[in-house]
Amino acid sequence: MALSTTSAPTNTTIWAEDQDLDHTSDSRCILDNEDWTYTVIPVYILVISVLGIVLNVFVLMVFCLHKKSCSTPEIYLSNLAAADLLLVSFLPFHAVSLSNRHNWTFGQAMCKVSYMSIIMNSFCSIYFLVLVSIDRFLALVHPLSYKRIRRSIFAKLGCLLVWILGFLFTLPALIYRELLQHNNRTLCSISNLSFTTKMTVSSVNSVFGFIIPVFIISFCTIKIIKALKNRLVHGVNAKKTDQKATTLILAVLLAFLICWVPFHLMRFLYLPHDAKIITECKTLRILYICGQICPYLAYFNSVLNPILYVVVGKNFRQKVKELFSQWNHERITTVSHTSTSTNLSRVVNHII
Image (cartoon, rainbow, N blue to C red; front, side):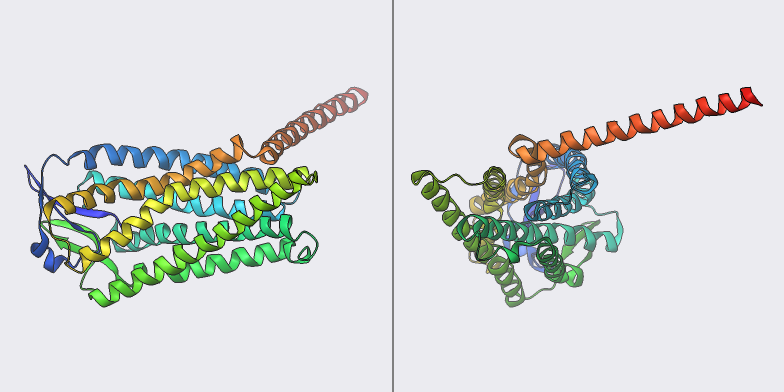
């Protein structure tokens, strides 16, 4: 829920992006010297887009091309990488739009799809982390009782369900987001939406897209940490694979919360603004700055995840080594086979 702005040569007018454009004059606030949002942030978006695409493609290649099948946590993490790749692939369109002071030049279809990718990433990412948290909880707290549930087939079905639900949560963007003409520019925004509808959509997204999954993740994480402590106290060692997977998952969870909690808190701050309770210029300026920083901090999570896989994930690093060894072996085999075929051909020709 970033902010959109209209600009004059010497000042900037601010309003919430999803605010009805017909009523923006009711809460105008002139902000000076905010051109950094059109210069610095687009460059930042392009950087995280390039890094995110390269790193997440690399992660997916490791998981998909490795000769061994993925474990249950790796199925969830590979789908998380796919969700991150979906997001960063569409961010360059927003960078170009922002550098043109929110003038959207890519058509209505791309307007809808690009914002749908953001919503789907936000929803799918947190629910893939819910699945992986539940998996770690079952692996460490109830390793025998729920062993059958942790089979890969159930993990894949769970991921499919998350993708379907994620798409359903993007339907408001598909239905309501459109191209609007404002101050000689084309904006990709939402207009003519009642406050009740906005509150309903925002409340549903906050409850099902943040509050409930964070509660589940927190519960599982607390139980996981307690289980690990109890094993240390009683001198019981967990399997090395479980320990490595759990360390990686906890790191990914922490990174997600650091990146996404400010974004969701900002959405709550917008409620009194949408209700026309907040109109002071100083408060609107703070909302504006938060609206420029918090979403792009959240998007950085899509770059941070694959870095964590390499830095923290010992199993992932081992998979990378094995994959490169596999490629080297195939290359050597191919070269050897080609060399043998060439030698045989020479022998045949010599005999003939």
